[in-house]
Image (cartoon, helix red, strand yellow):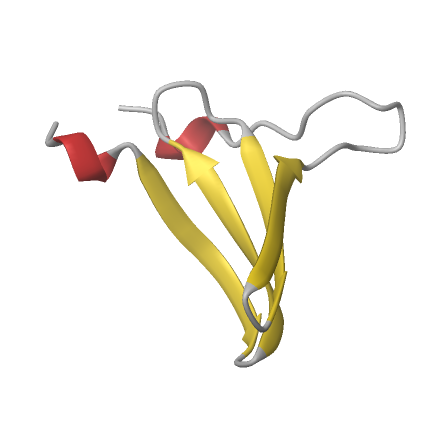
Length: 60
């Protein structure tokens, strides 16, 4: 796996202000990235129990 292949973007919405969901292919953990202009933030995507959302189908 190349260095830049660890994360894959699975969802995107918006252009100048938007939201993306990224999945770590090694752990399956989903991350939500929200941005507005030059600012942005990244955090693990949590389910209703407060645990990270894991996508097992993208694990290699």
